[in-house]
Every structure is written in C-alpha cells, then in structure tokens.
Image 1: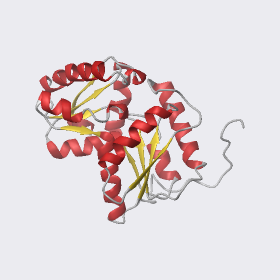
Image 2 (image 1 turned 90 degrees about the vertical axis):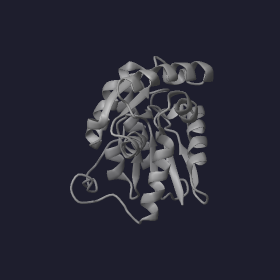
Image 3 (image 1 turned 135 degrees about the vertical axis):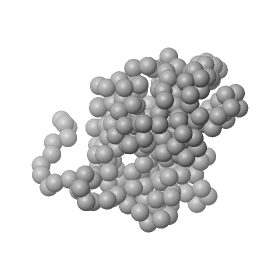
Image 4 (image 1 turned 180 degrees about the horizontal axis):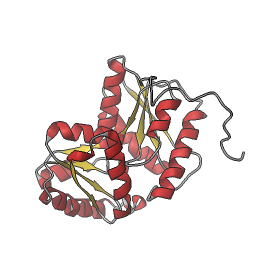
Amino acid sequence: MRILVTNCNTTQSMTDEIVRGARDAASPGTTVEGLTPSWGPDSVEGWLDSYLSAAAVLDALRTYEGPAYDAVVMAGFGEHGREGARELVDVPVVDITEAAAHLACLLGRRYAVVTTLDRSRGQIEDSLHTAGVGAHCVAVVGTGLGVLELGDAARTTDAFLTAARTARDAGAEVLVLGCAGMTGLERAVRDAVGVPVVDGVGAGVRLAESLVALGLGTSRVGGYARPRDKRRSWGRR
C-alpha cells in the first residue's frame, strides 16, 4: 500500500518531518511518500494562506507524476481543500483535522484542539463543523507559536503543555494536536497532562490504511461527484 501525504505549505523541511511521523505511524508494508506544493505560502496561518494553500495542493495533486498511490492524507490542520481533493482523485482522501477529531470522539465525550496561533481557531472550528464533529469540541487553544517556530523543541513543548492544561481545565477529556508540525509531541503531553493525545498525521495514516484495506472509496453520488467536464485555467504558466 502506498500513501501520498501532502504538506499544505512549501517548506520542504516540514514535509520531511511530517513524512517521518507518518512512516512511524504506518503499518509494515505501507509506503509513505511526501508531496510539497511548488507554489503557495511558506506556512499557513490565516484565511488567505489557507485558500492559497488549497489551490496549490490541488494543483500539486493534479500534476503529480510519481508512483501510483492508494490514498491521500492531507496534512494541513484546519486548512481548506479536502472536498476538492475528494472530487479530484480516485482514491480515498483523509484530512488530518477530520481524522484526529473522529478518533478523539472514540476516546472521550469531549475533546479540545491545541494549535499554533489563535488566528487559526476560526478555520479549525469551521473545518470540524463541516466534518460533523464540531459539537464535541470544547475548545481550540492556541500556543502563540507560528508554524515555522515549531522547530524549537523546548519552546514548543513548554507552550504546548501550557495550552494543553488550559484545554483540559476547560473540560477536554482528549486532546488533539492541531498542527502537522507538532507530530511527535503526543507522548510528552499525554504523560504530563494525563489524557489521551491524538496526532492528526498518525490518525490520518491509519484511517487511510483502513479505508484501502476495506476496499472503500469516495462516494461519487452527490457532493463528491466527479468534476463536470469544462475548461479550467490553473493560473499563469
């Protein structure tokens, strides 16, 4: 089985980190490959970045010429594009936001998301609502760190633990890592805060594997029907 993991930004080092986390979570025999958009924002932090990222990721999937893959995992937390990707490709598409929330709902009645900047809260809340899992989310808590600041491991861990305790005190029984760049923090946070912690990348990979193993694919009836045949311009070349 081969899974294609798409980064939502153009920072290759972040793609590499996401792929490492995805490979750690994958089952034996599953191959994980990363895909970095060739254009778009360096990091996604806000509505403008998110919409630009969505178009860039869809373009990267549209023009992909690598080995065939069995599923796509979209590694942008709260970012746009998953619905378009499900129309575009002929394999299951799993978004890490949706995947993490679904698993969190299996582990407790109420969960919270700990993310980067507070400005991302609206996008995450909207994404969870659209996926049908927003009602169980008690809080989306920011750490105050930008996406490109997550490379400072000590600072990131301290900020995440502070936000995680705030989320737990708000009533969360499960925590979700709200950024693909936070992959790997779940054990430290779980041990310090005392609740289950779900990493979206790992959740996305495992759910993608399950869909492929069960022979399930995206429904083509209704909202995810194939795009209508028409001319589409993909920007200037």
